[in-house]
Length: 105
Image (cartoon, rainbow, N blue to C red):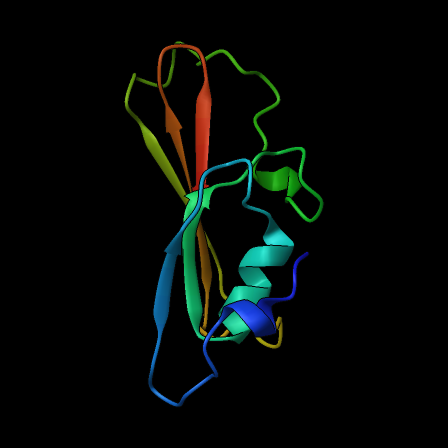
């Protein structure tokens, strides 16, 4: 991970920023580090990245017939003491034709 102190402005109380990343640059570690610096991150995280929960990974990449196309599954972590600025982290899975997209914010 690059030197975020040199890149980001100093942390100020009640001042927050937002960063949108593509899936190549997004990771769980980076998102958590940005959150500790009052920077919210929005982007798709590849399941192969370190720290990615197995609970969000679909075993079967094909959409089951019992799930209609366009169905959205939401997950929310409300664990305290995990280093996040906010009280929770969220993940969304969207079922398309054959693949499942997972976004975290």
